[in-house]
Structure formats: structure tokens, C-alpha cells
Length: 342
Ligand code: SF4
Image (cartoon, rainbow, N blue to C red; front, side, top):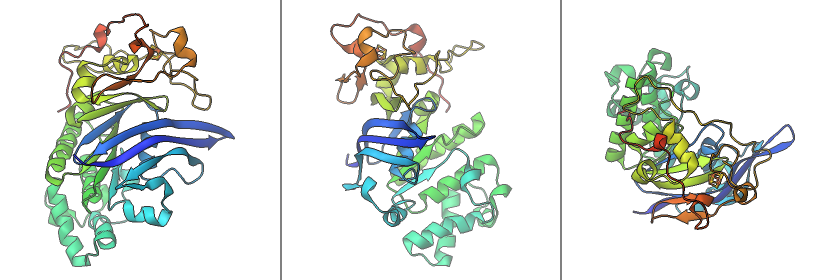
């Protein structure tokens, strides 16, 4: 499969109250055509900043690139002008957000919002854009699209607004769709429908998806590969089976332990004790050191290198060093039948 995006050693910081917050610290990953890569982690892990960096939606003050490259079709997006990025956003790379109400324009009909990008990026006439709009609404499962196209966002339900936003994002057949917590604001039944829709659309359109989420249940439903982020770094990456059935990083164990299990009816979910590191003064060594029950002296001041466990899985943890004590995966992280949302 062709690699369409290569993020290499990306670092991004924000200036807040005169202090640099190092939100993303040396992140590297690749995205292949037609695949779904999930980037998972708690809030503050750097996953959303990584996604927004690809869209170059952080480089207005106070966000800035401190290093690294984002290669899309072989060209470095960090070097593009705002004008060049406007050509890429929506046409080549699209994004959908957690709350469609904040990204849909409440004063414009859904049809007008779909037509705008078709007219701008595809040189369609108003009439062509309108009939393509109806097709797109139909594709994402909006009933009576011929009528609904003339309605405003407030006339749609929450699930329909999310479907409409997906229609807008897919209007120009983008190569990459970035979905930032696309189902978090929706109730469980609608979540399942939207995830099903995303899977279905990917099969039909072949668009590669980067899914940003804190919810491993969502990951198991749609992703093929997973990157686990913590403290601005990718601490473990692998395909879905590796991350769910052979995880090696204690933070991944914590995330799996905090997932609802099929047989855990009524049991409390296990939160990971402690809080994420202060990225205004990030730890020198492993970012998880203050919360990790297996932390050793070496973890405090030395960032572990990646250990390659397979062609697709790599993990940054000192426990994988041959001199480290043998640690078994905790029972809470063993996924016997993780609860899928779909
Ligand atoms: Fe825990 Fe050390 Fe591994 Fe970090 S490197 S996850 S602190 S054992």
C-alpha cells in the first residue's frame, strides 16, 4: 500500500503565560492509502494537537512547529503558506469534529455548506453542486435528502448533523479524513451508527482515516492500526490485534483496564491513578513515570528507545530491556472479549 502521509519527528509547542507547553514531542508515524489509524490517549496526551498540526490549524500564534516534517504526497506541509493550505484543506485533507454545531454554520443551509467546497475546489456550477449535495446526503444516510438539503443545522438531530458534517468533509473526495472524537458527543446507539457509516464510507471511497479518540472501544470498531500517545509522545504503536491482545506498554495496559468489558456488568471502571505530566516542564525520562506502577530508577531520567516487537508493533518502555525484571501483563488489561460499540 502506498504511504500518503509521513510525520517525522514532529514537535509542536504553545506559548501560554510566557511558558512553552511542549504538546507534541518528537512524534513519527505513517499513514497508508485506505487505512484507518487511531491515535488514542487521554486528554492532554497530544493526540488532537498532532491532528490539528496536519491541517496546519495550530500555527497561528501561540502554536508553533519546533521541528520535524509532515510529508503529504512528498511535500512538507509545515513549509506551506496559508494560501497553499487553503487549497489542501477540504480538498485533499478534511476534518470532522466532536461537536458538529461548532463547525457547521448555523446561518447557512446544509446544502449551501456542502456546495461551497464543491464550487471552490471542484469548479462545479451551483446546479451541479446542489445535485452532488443531494447524492452526498443520501450516501451518509440522511432521509429525504432533496428536502433536507434546504434545511439549517438546527433542524437536524445530533446524529444527522454529524452525518452532514461527514458529507461536507467527503464532498471533494479527500485522500485523508481526520476525525477528532467524532462520536463522543453522541449517545451510544447513534455512535454505533456513525462508526458503521465511517467504515462503510471508507470501503466505498477508499479515503484514509486518522481517528483521534480516548475510547478504545471506538478503536476496536473501526481502526486497523493504533498509536498510543502519552505526554506528547507515541509510547506504543501496533495493529489492532497487537494493541488489544499483546500490549507491552504499562500505559496501554492502563487504557485497556479502564475499558468496559463484556463481563464487567455493574463493576466500576478502573481509572489510571494520577494525572498526566506538566508539559510546560516535561519529564526528562519516560513521560508515564509518575503514574507507572513498574517505574524503575532508569525511567526517571532516560527516555526509553523503541523496541521493535514485530514489523508493525513498537513500544517505548524500559521493561523491554533485557536487564529489566520480568513483568506480567495485569489481569485487568487482558482483553477476553472487549466490549465493542458496534
Ligand atoms: Fe513505566 Fe519505566 Fe516503562 Fe515508563 S519506561 S512505562 S516508567 S516501566
